Image (tube, helix red, strand yellow):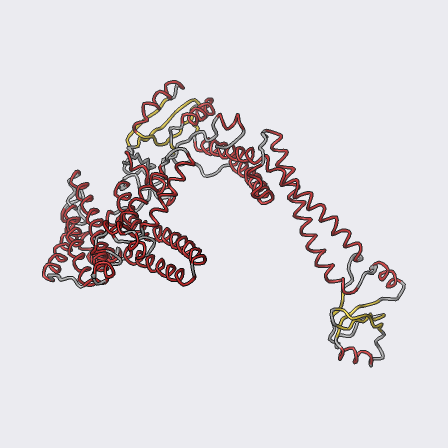
Length: 621
């Protein structure tokens, strides 16, 4: 359920602002309203955190996997700041050395074919009137140069399979196609010595940076401290001061925490006002899960979706339908056993059963059940033939091997699964209509008749989907009358609401006539959308069968490798399909029929994020 929130305003003496904010942070109760995004103090902290994160990334890149086994050492205060500063300098020096190393390597590659010589000697000759210019050219151009009496040159050894010459006195005329060689700043020997020095500098920098891996816990803890300090400064900037006498700040609080807040305010001598949330306010959402429903939270956290404060909490329905969709998309009891094994391993290693662990148990169970009733075990008929007891769980009418086991044409079994998909779609969308009706009955909202109209449309459009896809017999009179009645109720009553006259609601409904028509078409497409459960499940089965066929032809050893790789690939693709399709049906089709937009944001109170144990031990939990 979505917890009821209260609007809270706190007033205290301006001289006690710091004390008030520290007490609020320690209590961790108040979600600050209109929190300032940034301020000079938080920007300064952000810059410091940016530097620290840059150092941490460099250390992780340098130490690699070996960083996990390094014994951690405590570091804080000025010593930590000094270490970060030194590491930044080292990283900067290493970057400069690497850039110079790259440049010198390229320069050495360029001049190596010309041999080792002293550029300063050539510059000295030029000052005495003997300037030399060096070129590479092909044989034809060299022949032309030889015939030019105005050009004095000395032939050199070939460079990169090209002729090389040193022209005396002046540059080669532009009419000759030749590439001039630019003299280097130092000799080849000097460049190589400098390159060796740079390599030594880079190696030392690598060692220094990698050695800092023993302070990674200290760095992580400092990042948390900086984040906490930044939030404090933002809250401080949010609090408003009046005439240097009083300071006030406002926010939101769950109704069941009001007594805790009153005790806190009494202890600190604050004046406060606790009020109901106004209609024009947009408070945060705090979901309170009951029993097993809490296991849906990991999915919400991954998706980052939060219902609006005034929207529905569909957690229980989301969990129910998501579990079914997951099972139908994965579709294989063998894969369900793999998920079950993973859940058991996670449980044993963690020595406790987390919500994510329980969720995996539930999803593996539904997958095993669905795979068992459809006779799908690693996409193999041979498994069913060898382990005949597995056939006891099969429902022949939806079995993927109905022809081989029961002589039932595959098309009939496939039609039955598609009908099941449409039934799920109609049930979920119809449930949305019922939930809307129940919600509106409580407030005597006449637009509930519009939702009844949508329910009628869902039912008759479900019949139409069966006719179009699997050829089921349909009474078109019922379909036409049902759509007409449903559409009439939507147009006439869909825009009614408490406090609005019937005539005004009717006018608004007629004004949205075309939109309602498009919504009716969309309702039909939403029902059709549930066919994706069948399509993705069949694709997964086809992939498994293809890998099994390849394995049979490859022999026992390579065949086992192919089966393992195929299973892993199929599971990964199945999980991606669950995210794309299974989640979509809940967040778009079902939520859209409910009128939900998922516009909420989480209740996130101003609180301490670094606990005492972390500070004392110098580690991050």
